[in-house]
Length: 180
Image (cartoon, rainbow, N blue to C red):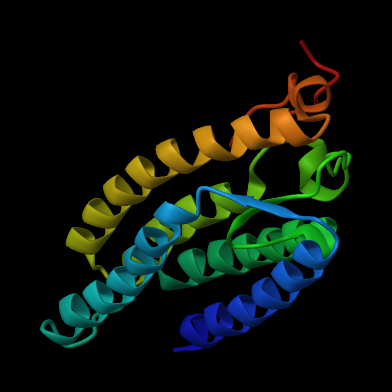
């Protein structure tokens, strides 16, 4: 329940940021797939509820370790969100001529927020032993991210200095961009 409330609050922040960016000339691309992302996340929580409720809400014996990992993942989520500031959004919106954010976790990887989502879609089902949800939604999310990241990176390259700034960064795995 806490994660659902968290997502709803994030959607409010995203809407506020969307209005701010659009009032300053922000351009949205890829909006046709946004509803599928929303449905994927709603489906994830519904699947979790169905799978766990039919089995009596089991909790993994590894729950302390998984809960700690989830807390770390949430820290990274909010580190990424605060690093992007008013540019963070659940939609793909660009400010033409803007410089790519190079602070926070963006110093180490191109898509820390997507890394967080990948980890959440694994850790949350592991916590409640919802293995069917883990497999199904990890696969659906991989398909969605494959599509979304192509659109996002194309837009970033077109509207910002992304290509020159992030070329040495890994998409999902943190690394020091100074290393070869």
